[in-house]
Length: 244
Length: 103
Image (tube, rainbow over all chains, first blue to last red; front, side):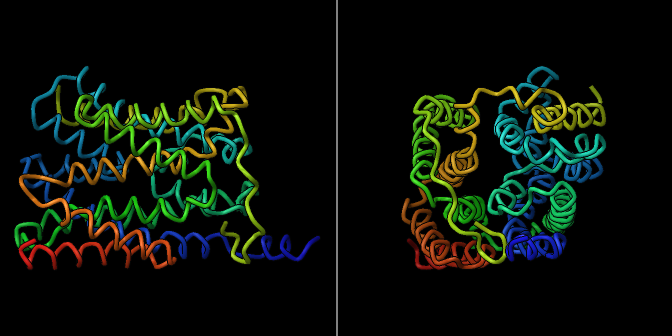
């Protein structure tokens, strides 16, 4: 057994998950705060508003749901709006499918509930999650910690939102978070191309398509990569911590 | 439609999207080219999300610099491997400073 294999076998997946997700949870807290303020501003019953946090486990899905419900939207439009904003979750599902193949049935049903940009980002940054048990522990630990901070920050926003000064530009938290998650992934030309094409298309489609610009941009970007059909270069040597 | 029912439907819809290729559809029959393309799925999604989040954060007549400059700071720090929480904090501080300076 190689030295790196031994190190992988003995490393605690829970400790790795906590180490990887902690900075992400701190970065996500301002977004949760904004969601909490939104719940208060829309006049949604607090029980429904706060229960939507763990049940939807996604800021974009939650804001879409709350906004449409507050506007009195009917069921078809509600489902349609959620499907649009959740197309990227389908893409994530396909990209993570290999991690779930050797998992027990209960985890294949429960585990996907925690698929969101942040959990996907930390998983795809590692190359030592091939063992099913290790991945399961890593995934659930990261998801639990992220979920706890997410729900807490939403509750904090709901209580403290009215006291936050307008000079604090919380609207910058979302683009800064996504940019911070994106930059470390731009290690290969195809990753840069994928991000650039999707970002450019999103900018162009934002005006005419609105909420549909995200799935349109992502699907078009991946379609372009599929057509070119070349495999990305293999990752570099494993870092001691198993991160790419 | 009652609110609890709408939330249940919303949760189910979101779960279906997440579980689509894990618990519902066969993922091992995806075309090879699509599998290769999906290796770049995360940067593609994050690239689109970054741009859309920036566009959605701009309201009123706020100067473009007030939104772009903090993201340059964030990108620079992320390139240097700075902790993600500090990256976001730096962006917020930069944005607040620009706002206080009247930019």
